[in-house]
Length: 141
Image 1 (cartoon, rainbow, N blue to C red):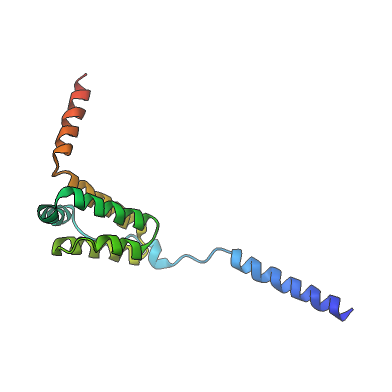
Image 2 (cartoon, rainbow, N blue to C red):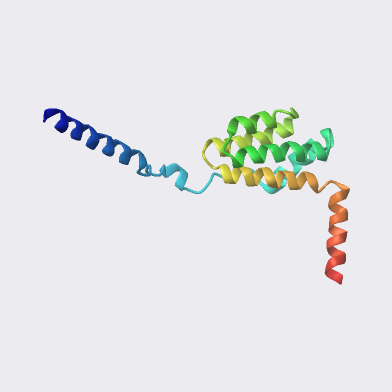
């Protein structure tokens, strides 16, 4: 009889433990606030342009695409690893901003900033110009 009672107590304790794990964690108030102001568009564009002048737009876009994918997956180590493929001071400054946002839990903001930086790098290619002319032509028809 005592064995059944102790078995019942054990089952009850396990249910409480499992239920406690399923309960949502309280939100961290620091993450509920607005994200910190990171970098202005003009400054980001200037930094990206410097990097593009050193290593070329295709390489910058490729690196930032990998960084963005890692940030979307909330993988700071992967983002850092992808970002380390370029060691120019201007790129390091951009990466510092991205990784600071991510380390504070603002992964979507960091991923969006990486996308914006990639778009700024793409602006300097002829593909961008051709796409604009094609878009302009399509609007005219």
